[in-house]
Amino acid sequence: MADEKDYYEILGVSPNATTEEIKRAYRNIAKKFHPDVNPEPEAEEFFKRASEAYQVLSDPHKRQVYDTYGINGLKQRGFAGFTSVDEIFSTFFDDVFSDLFGTRRRRRRKPGPESGEDLRYDLSISLEEAYSGKEFEITFDKMKICPDCNGYGSLEGKEAFTICTRCNGEGQVALSRGFFTVATTCDLCGGSGYILRNPCKKCGGVGRVRGKAKLKLDIPAGVDEGTRVKISGEGNAGIRGGPAGDLYIYIHLKPHNIFRREGDNLRSEIEITFPQAVLGDIIPFKTLNGNIEVKIPAGIQSNDTITIRGRGMKKLNNRGYGDLIIDVIIKTPKKLSKEEKKLYKRLKEISESNR
Image 1: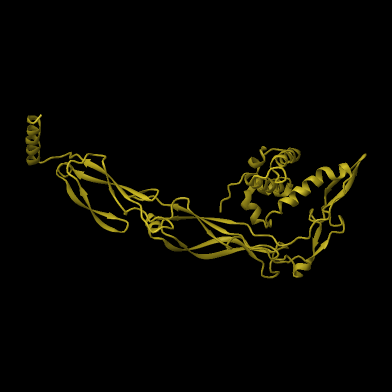
Image 2 (image 1 turned 90 degrees about the vertical axis):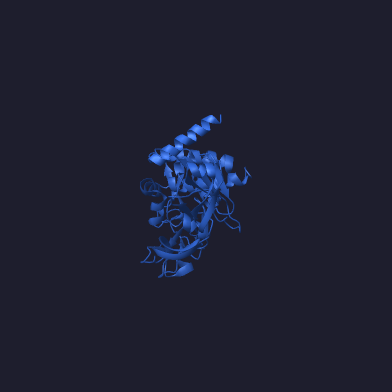
């Protein structure tokens, strides 16, 4: 399940960036792309990615896991998705400004439902399978709802969270350093503002466990390299009653020894002899859906093409078919019998006399 996000690249910092450099980069992005200052949909999407990157890279433990194992490493270690952009943004500016200017910190929201992450599965299929469509059964790893706590992380269910007594639900505690008082993340609740009572022993309070999943899926006729098929609700399970993520199937076509695909068209080659090129002929040819006869017109040249309508690939989500394009290759004989040499010499003489 590959994930191509590079959190350092998103924030525009190097992998060796300090915490302050990461915070500064996120602040600059927020000034340009926060939805309150930039209403463009692309800006909002980029700000969401930047917020997700900041949440990981600003946390020393998550950053270490990410640097070593990547995003899949974070998922495998039970990190339950990412908090909302508003919460990340609020936490960020609380950290930077609240105690410097004496502003009042707000109590964190009680942890609620969280959506499961989307998953990716890469499926390699043959050209014949892409032409006709096929049902596949796949097996993959995913996070499932913990059967002991039903995804709540505690046997007490929805009421398992209590306000942290150390930070009073704010997620931060004030520390005096000389003449200054600064805020730091509460080490008891980890900044959430709440404590989970009686964590589930099976899942460690995460609410999910890793397991294998089997799924039958219908790949429609006409899929191409890079086609993405969405299977709703088959991603990682949600937390505390949140919806499951989606599963995205990415199609990859195996190389074929006869045909190559060009959009909805198929391309192939046919070898003919010199006499066939001169006189024309009808040649049997095997396609993906049966045998046909290809008419070779007299006088055809090498590298000319013959197009056969409707013998290409099935068009995805369409009743039609593409075309079959055949490149003609005139095969020059390397060995000739005495009779063949005699005929070719005679042909040469006739050709020269007609010039």
